[in-house]
Amino acid sequence: PVSRVVYNGKRSGGPRYPGAGSEIFTPAHEENVRFIYEAWQCVERDLRSQMGSERGLVEEYVEKMPNPSLKAFKPVDLGDLKRRNTQDAKKS
Image 1: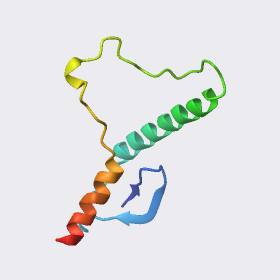
Image 2 (image 1 turned 180 degrees about the horizontal axis):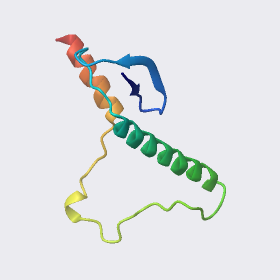
Image 3 (image 1 turned 180 degrees about the vertical axis):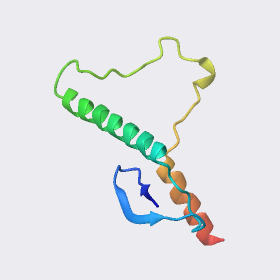
C-alpha cells in the first residue's frame, strides 16, 4: 500500500488499495510531487523575503513584445469557477 500525496505536501493516514475506486501513487510520483512542493516553498520564501528589499532572488517575467492577439485576455479565477460549477450542479 502507498500513502496518498496531498497538494499541501502532507500525507493522509490511509493507505490506498487497488480496486478501491482511487488511484495508486507510485514512489516515483510521490517523489516528483514532493520535489515540486519543496521547490515551490523555496520560491514563496524568496518572494516573502524579497518584499522588503529592492532586489531579491526572484524576478517576475514580463514580455518585452506582448502578443497582440492576447490583448483581450482576462485571467480566470479558478476558485470562483469551481464554486459556480458546484452551485450549478446542486441546482440540477
